[in-house]
Image (tube, chains in turn blue, purple):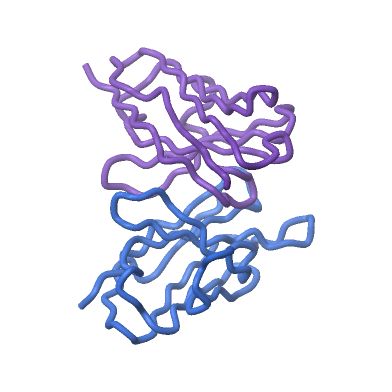
Length: 112
Length: 116
């Protein structure tokens, strides 16, 4: 199985400051269809997960442009350019290239 | 607006069975693969099973193979998860989600508790 490793697992942030989460996979996520199926999800307390980013860097409709995704192969990053109050929660990466699909452990973003 | 409504959860004894349902609306259901994801209390997300658009291809996490069956009824815009031989470690909030390579929309989840 593809292991997804996120770091850090806990991320204390400051309002208005940038933040970054790393996600590394144990093998390349380039699919035979040419796409790299790496997604990022936000889960606010008590809510269902919400997708922010798909195929590495494509932002979902309604997602603020302060969120961005980058990377290739097996090394990916989610960046928040300026953290806002409703960004607290747990962030997960997920690979959709190989079976079984796998998630990272989650990164808890909370204010200092 | 895409809506996914999960139902069917509850308290069940070890070894028992449950059938989860997910009612979909707001999109062409038959045009999308679908997925079940679960989240044990206080834990992270775990992919459980996916099914392709016409139900011909199904994939499962090893821990549920032979016990869980994913299915769909495109005429009813519904996704199902039949869970048999339930174990304490299956206790979780179960979400249905749209997609298989990526999960663009999620239901609200339905809680399954396996306990005697």
